[in-house]
Amino acid sequence: MLASIVVASSLAAGALAQSTPLAAKRFQWDNLPYKADTDTGIRGFQIGYNRCNGTTQNQDSLCQTAVINSIDDFCLWAPPEPGKTVGDIEGPPSSPPLSSPPPLLLHADEDVGTGEMVAWCTKEGYGTRIIPEGALQGVQFIRTPHYVQVVGYIDQVKIDMQADDYGGEMDPHGADQRGNPLGGLLFSNAFGGNSSRNGTRNGTQFQQVIQWHNFMGGAQFCLKACDPSYENGWAMCEHIFDRIGCIYNAPSNWSKINGTFESCLGDDQLYPGQYIENGRTMTYTQPPESLGPITTVPYTPFTPSSSSCTPYTSASIYTAAAQLAPSSSSSASSSTMTSSASSTDSGSASATASSGSGAGSAAGPASTGAAGGQQNSQPGSGSGSGAEDLKVAGAMVAVVAGLIGVVAAL
Ligand SMILES: *[C@@H]1O[C@H](CO)[C@@H](O)[C@H](O)[C@H]1NC(C)=O
Ligand SMILES: *[C@@H]1O[C@H](CO)[C@@H](O)[C@H](O)[C@H]1NC(C)=O
Ligand SMILES: *[C@@H]1O[C@H](CO)[C@@H](O)[C@H](O)[C@H]1NC(C)=O
Ligand SMILES: *[C@@H]1O[C@H](CO)[C@@H](O)[C@H](O)[C@H]1NC(C)=O
Ligand SMILES: *[C@@H]1O[C@H](CO)[C@@H](O)[C@H](O)[C@H]1NC(C)=O
Ligand SMILES: *[C@@H]1O[C@H](CO)[C@@H](O)[C@H](O)[C@H]1NC(C)=O
Image 1 (cartoon, rainbow, N blue to C red):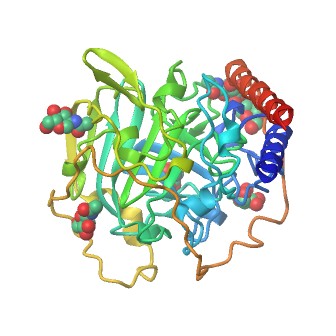
Image 2 (cartoon, helix red, strand yellow):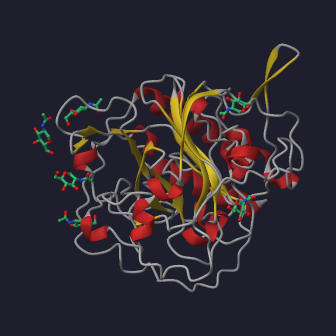
């Protein structure tokens, strides 16, 4: 009891020390700070950087600025080195729903990680790592009225994940609001971008994505980026269903994707966690981890329809991977993808328990030292959007109230 109070207090203190939540900070593509996160809370420092360039374009890059533009141009978050599970380094589980505050306290007994995932991309030019050849085994990119999303299957060992890691969720929130990864930013040219010359890359307009979520693990991935101008982006890109993975957060035709590559238009999914039963819209409540692994979920997620799909071959779109020195993976990986849709899916399949405890056998390039140097930390130009601040303020009040409650109960 005492221990959990201490942890709760320090979590609350860490959260209070965070001046501006990551999701309330605004950045321009061509004017990024060295680090979006300049805080030193309970999870320590942001391990990488957001200003990425030709110098940081390599397989040891600690770039934490990702993009999602199209089927041949997106990034995923993965570990900076092999040997740890996503759960180890993702950081604390995502924070409570922004709309209905509390229970940060419920998370107080969770491991507190460091949120150190880095960007792995399909294209060069962003100063990031490249997703190696053969890693992407099937991909669907979809553009709907309110988001763009990429889902698929991945040989996750090729991006420094453990083979049996069921992973976890990355998003710009977290219990301390500093994001998973800490300071991780996502940009896209899919939403109209900025009409000024700034924010362009060779004439292409990039805009910061404010609400997004990315699940990695169990050989699957999904990354959804909600349109920054969509007022319900926080719900469509909800971050609280962090233990039920891609199948529920990004419903797709999962049994048909492996071995295929296509880019589509499509309809919006229901908000994650929502489902229709007897004509009524229901909202699932994810049980706390203290109740053990989630073995069933009481609904099959609704898969929206797609249209205007264009098929591709992986070799034709993931050309940067082919240019990587094939040294990174020596194991045989048949990189030619012909279509072989044969994985099982069953929407109600066992949802993943994200708490893998990987005893890390750190066999990779140590990340120490890389993030030091000529620090050029500008205060993250946070023009706090009122909405996010208000919701956060609500959560703070709830935390403090909760602490008072605990103390009073003693
Ligand atoms: C390239 O990015 C690194 C990491 O952010 C930074 O330290 C360096 O100053 C940048 N180089 C240039 C030329 O901008
Ligand atoms: C930008 O344009 C220049 C000149 O046309 C070209 O060399 C470079 O490859 C382009 N960069 C990207 C990332 O497309
Ligand atoms: C567009 O860029 C200008 C100049 O960098 C900036 O002031 C403005 O806020 C940007 N607009 C959006 C929607 O990002
Ligand atoms: C573009 O950004 C630079 C600094 O990064 C600034 O000096 C300039 O005024 C900006 N231009 C526009 C049109 O916003
Ligand atoms: C899923 O499959 C159904 C049936 O073939 C199809 O109508 C729908 O468009 C597909 N949706 C997506 C997102 O691929
Ligand atoms: C996806 O397909 C590849 C072969 O292309 C196979 O090795 C892999 O096991 C499949 N993944 C799943 C989850 O079925």
